[in-house]
Image 1 (cartoon, helix red, strand yellow):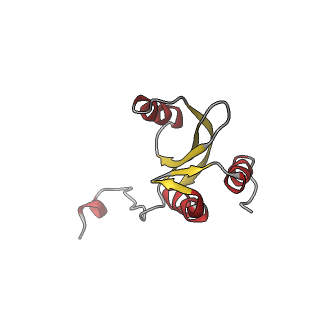
Image 2: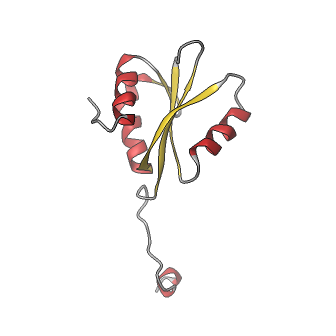
Image 3: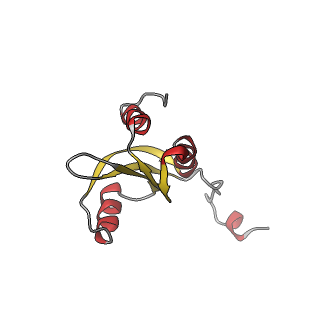
Length: 109
């Protein structure tokens, strides 16, 4: 028997189902050229501040939505043709349009 099961009220969350925020952080001036699509279980503003520390360019929070790690991974797959490296994507028209749709609560095209 798992020790976790011995703790009253403990529930195991399947991988990728932890709730938090899927965020979209842009970089580029004067127009956004790249976007980081990430997940945090904490405060998205704190995540931006943490990332900004290691980046020589000004970053901006484009927005965030309530979501899961699995949803973040799904977006990485949808936008894979625009991936630069890691969680960074070119903010080309397909990505830009769909990020805006997500932030407005609409479906990805």
